[in-house]
Length: 392
Image (cartoon, rainbow, N blue to C red; front, side, top):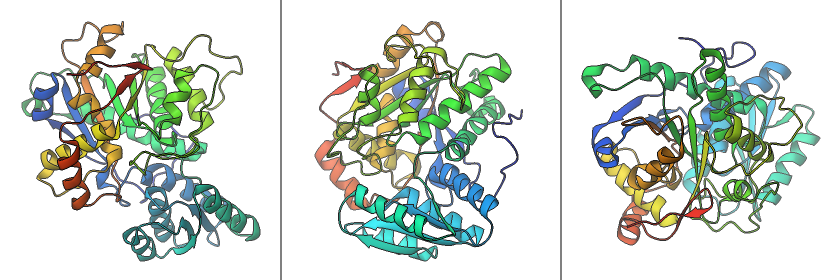
């Protein structure tokens, strides 16, 4: 089965098809069928290879081999841009703040990137990147979570998931309906990935006539611009001083396009890059096609250390961002809540739930040991579509 999600061929060595693995232990624990999409296997170590890689590829296709790719990110987006630039054979400069971890800077430089350290937070670092892109005639700014090319790159994960579910062998997972993923859970920071997920699901639904997959977006408290914006109709919420420990998710303001498209997808399950200007009436939450979840950092930390131990015996270290995406597995009341309110899902005995294991380098074994000791099973608040979930 092939779905042409983009306007043309963009096959390239910048991202790979990652494994989709069935977890019997997590399925038994949650009462649903749990699948893990391992973006940890991407060349840059995270899903950013898809979207940022596509943005870099498109820029070089348009502007040629003298392109100078410029990004502002001391994290996974910067690593993806640096690796993409290396593979494309073009110059790359990454702006980071002066407190960026040495391991990240070393990794960026190992990909051949010129790293510019700056005092101050994201605004100042990003301004430096924009200034250089404006001054350099070959300079092209690569945004970490905005742009249609980035979204198209991220949407490629949906085709893979559909194809891989249908190719899964029954002797591996038992008698499971492979027709589609019922729910895809992803952490949300800037909003580029979830916008790609919604676009990809919308396209496949349109082309096959099947119901659109329900998207579950998870943010951490203090990095929840996306969730809070959805909970407050016709309002865009910024976080002046993000305080979440999940640094890969922490931004003052997510993509406004992502919030707009989330409101549309929540109500209609349909999305395009040219949405009709008329507003979607009614609250965007409590909808058939999308759920917003906000959690305390402790739950993300708890899920991170658990999955690290369960996935491959501790070989792959799990960031807090993936821990956030895992929350419906370790707190299955979230899935029960979605299922009970969904006309499409309520009669399913067990759901096919795909977790985007988004990857990333911002974690160490020391961090995970700390999460295990401090957070244990997790505590604090969980909000589902703005309403606090009662946990045991």
